[in-house]
Length: 215
Image (cartoon, rainbow, N blue to C red; front, side):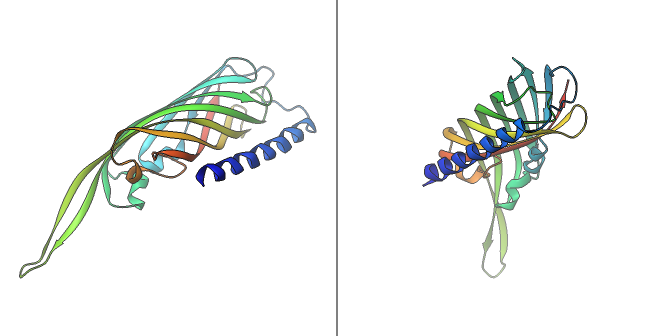
């Protein structure tokens, strides 16, 4: 069912992009500067919601193609967004992702769209804190702490849009999905965060949002 749903959503995204591509042809040529950008630095503010920091480096291979490498590091006593699911603490992890992007127009255009195959690897640990009530003449509670861990690799593609908000500052958003394969650990379901940080086996949706500086 997930596979069918993802396929339908991606087909819809392609139709939206096709309409979007056509709309570009009707727009006047608008760029932020005369020549295309060669390098771009990415920052993902969504990583802060799960207790992390993500930075990326994008290097143009042609005027309409580029290679993007993202690295994320997670180190949070409060475990970030995981706390909304249950009681977690002491989260740490690493995420590495590579994309090859195909843009509709040169990368110095104020508005642009892209498609990007991706490959990523991520590993994460977090302490799960479970409070147990002990009845009796002198009732009390104890907290059991179990360390959860998961490592997953994924591959798929993203469809996205980029828009300039200043001369060389862009907003970058994408949605897509792919196939994810757990490779170690036993808690992929518990550590899974839908869209932002998928860990579970199978076809999963994936979304991204970034702020970038073009150089």
